[in-house]
Length: 427
Image (tube, rainbow, N blue to C red; front, side):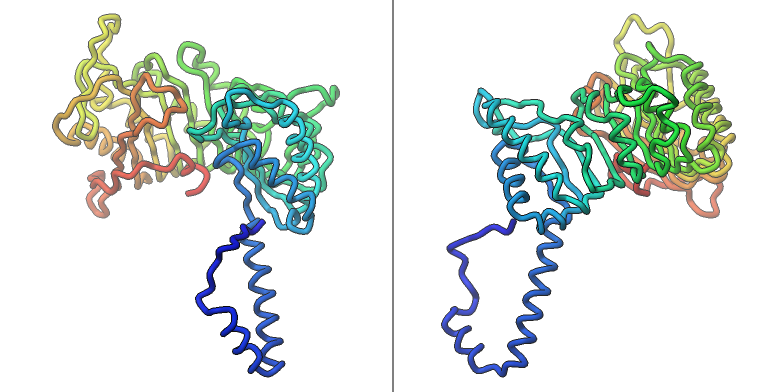
């Protein structure tokens, strides 16, 4: 779908170009034609390799694209990946439901022409001009198609529990990379007898929620390589949950090397002993980990502690104990149970921050971690305000350390750039 610009000006006037071409022999003209066709073909391949409709996410945009694919199925065959908005946007206060219905019909028809589609990404739209949004996605859109997906990622915060059914997962048996979001579980309505035995046999990379037990149990039974596991927060989580989750991952114990362990901690943390138990459970159940991101569970809501240039001060009279994470000793000692760990990322939450001294306390904890785990090479610490929404785009403070070669557990600051959210998948 190349844009047409009637005001496009050539660097060479068209009349001069015509005169030049008239003077060339036919063999050279033939070569130019071949080159031009090849160039145009490669431009189209690059243009349609990944179509992103999330950028604006408007009804008009999606409707225009779907109609063009229906008229040009040859171009639809070039699409290898598509990003769709989880909800459709409208620049007017009221959404024309008839127009939305027409758009969804067109989109469903367009998907039928995308025989080479291998990746679908669904995410939230970010467009300040949008006045209204409308839920439109249905699992039916992805059923009965010729394409075979290798990646299916649903990153939206909205609830889309009806989007993926066992029939969809059975049809898309080539999926290797699956990501889900909150309140997203497999809908059991297609099979009753041993429904998951032949589902997702090739899955190796997954981002899932422990709360969605059908999908979790299905994924956990596969030989995963990389996993982001989101656990419920301390008020809803127990040590038994940690044990059950890691034990369920036994089929992946030999293959899993990258784990993003994400435990929601929006209203307070737990003490050091609980973290030690969790680390021990992970180390025993998943002995081949090289990458561990331990996220959202260390609470800096304490009397006084310092994180790379900021002091966090608690004024909460309800808090009866004085956590000082940067002075912990048992926590870093627990890392000795990891025999292959190379990268350890810690995410913390704070409520109060004021300018203070530099990185002394953070470095001390990091060096104790390095001393306990001889294979560690890199430790990253990321902080986010405790009361932020989990999907907030609030700026995160970050610092990372690397081991200094030949100096034991000594470290040096290597970056203040945040560790990418997708590092568990991409590094």
